[in-house]
Amino acid sequence: MADSYAILEDQYKKILNKYLQEKDEQGLYHAQQFSKKVMENQISPEEMVSLHLEIIEDLFPNLPAGARDSFEFLLEVMIGYGLAYREHQSLRDRQKELEAEINVAANMQQTLLPKEVPYIDSLDIGVISVPASKMSGDYYHFVKDENGCLGVAIADIIGKGVPAALCMSMIKYAMDSLPEQRLQPGALLENLNRVVEQNVAANMFITMMYGSYDPRVHHFYYSGAGHEPGFYYNAKNDSFEELYAKGLVLGVTREANFREYHKKVEVGDFVVLLSDGVTECRTDEGFIEREEITNLIRQYSHMPAQEMVNNVFYQLEKLQGFQLRDDFSLIIIRRKV
Image (cartoon, rainbow, N blue to C red; front, side, top):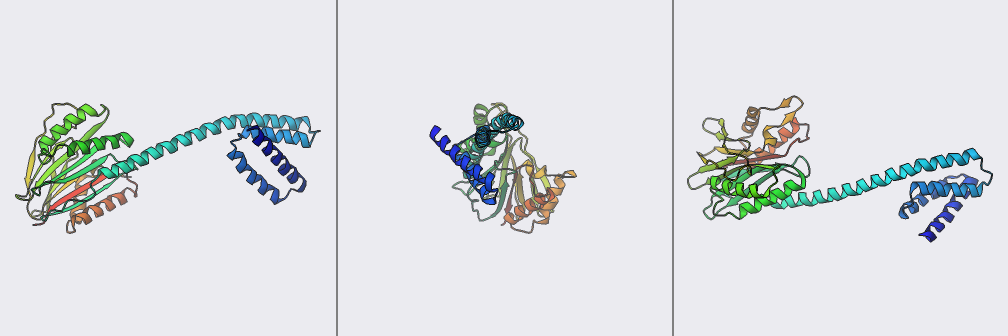
């Protein structure tokens, strides 16, 4: 280290002396190139000022006292600057580490979401889920059993970042471990509630709506755990009604019970499941009303389900100036025949 410092000192002395004699652009260029070596050798700002002063005193032995004092003053300034700069660099390094961790968690989240929507002859299904930032608190899940019945879940984890991603993974694997319960909404939520109550921190909450669609009789069975009510669209009457399912959020108490509801689905009717990022869309004028959501869905109801959810998302994103304030998830399940 001492040898490399001596080499740098000699190089700097030559560059500085040459510049003071010729004062040309080439000298400034050499100074810029030399600064890279200073950074590579991790020489602090105050060390550089001290080196500069030593060389100036060597080049100009009769340096006025005031000039020398000014360099001493600058040295003290740079000591403070150097300490602040190193602290800043340390914070930047830590920020990069956190960003790397968040990127890993965000990628992990993507692996937890369904890669494709199950195909059922009589159903048209559309889904869109967009995080407001890198990490999402929304989760959705599809499963199809051997009888062709469709299980669908939509959940909102009240919490962000890596803890939400870990919680999401726990939900997925807990659901996958209960195949015999998965198409019985009330029973599934009761089992999942016990898992959450035992394993999730008290300051984190999970809301969920879980439904099961039986295409053999075209009934939709569903239960809710404190989740945002969805909608049911009656094609014959061109009307919407709330798909409300009363129930506590998951994990509050181990003994929670979840009531099961059901709807008979006619041709053209559809079920809308969503997160509160849809219904709590906030513009400069305040929150939009739920009726505005249903009017928007009705506007695109002639389209395939996937185009419906895409267009609804685009319009609501546009209302927010293309800056989502909350995670957005929307699922539409329509009976075709």
